Length: 362
Length: 185
Image (cartoon, rainbow over the protein chains, first blue to last red):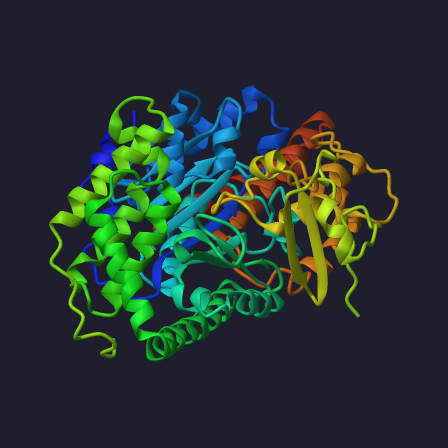
């Protein structure tokens, strides 16, 4: 069912040719919305859920931003297809668990997805590579305003946009930025950063693993609070914290390079060697090796043009994608072979690492 | 002063943290989450399978606040036995799940919800976007319905003069709405 989506050669996350930032992989803003006159998905009967699904899908499909978009009924998707969509950040795991009457609409370049009947009737998200909170907020805002012209949304003056869980009340806005923070992890500062930003109402979690030592050094950083502040205040507060984190990360990298040059270059060099010769590779190890390759691009050891390849492989090496590409259910060990084959092939085309430009400022 | 306590309000010291029970199902907890909200430490302990179920490992869906909302943040709320006439949700349901059932719930459970928000958010009142178009439409529909009800009542009571007035008002209102929609389109 999702084949056209995977084969799309203009998908934002896997095919973006734009110059991405050295620290930020992607930015996402989502809004939680509900219809005024229907019970929230969890309290709705399956007949009501189906009504909500078809009503919302109809209105969303009419919007300009969804032109040539695709709709999937979750109950029609296989487990593997759901996993692939989760790995692409197009749907949540919670949506996969829902009963009859849930769906998702995804636009052509996969920058916009709207989940229907997840925890709320609508979860509207825009996602792009790079660090661009403001422009993404503008896009999701205008999408939401267009939708409001045809749908009556649940709203109260006091609580703002009404959501099933009180944690989303008010703006219903969750902005999150995917950050690659090897410098902070390697210099043991991540724990401190997490504690500091938590105090500011900002949440950090590892994308592929847990805690402060996340696999692949990729973290998702997002606002926790949604009520009592306007959308632009939330965005700018988060943006300021993120800019500070970026500065700390870059400092940590250069400090580590200064003090442990041989050690760092050895790590990157070995990772490159492994990727060109590996025959068995778990998902976790792949994420960690790719993390070092992204660092290699940041340090000008690999051409900037290869950054998007590394970012694409972060997604394409996850278990669902490897299995989907194999076209059949394959066992973990065969998956590790397939993943190794893929990376070996990809890395055989890359130029050798350049070690004499390292540390030139970005 | 920071104090550690589990979702049921039991406090414990760090040495005990090794064999905690899952706050969801009582199996041995292997996933321990800590978050500081407004200078208070909130901790949740989960077993492997509940952590998976709650989406702790899911980059998209998980937020500690969601778990907290289900456990300690809904503790100690005013003891009001309320029922939403629209969706049937009861106070106990909200305490158990941390979720409301429909938009009408927010009027019914307002006094139960407000204290939960104080610890959770920057403020307790909305300061963001207002869906003007949808609200105007909802208000005008409500107003039209009131006029139609009045018209029906006037006819039933054979108050034909009043009925004529309401009929004219409805007509004028509908024309105004149609004109407004035409200019917007």
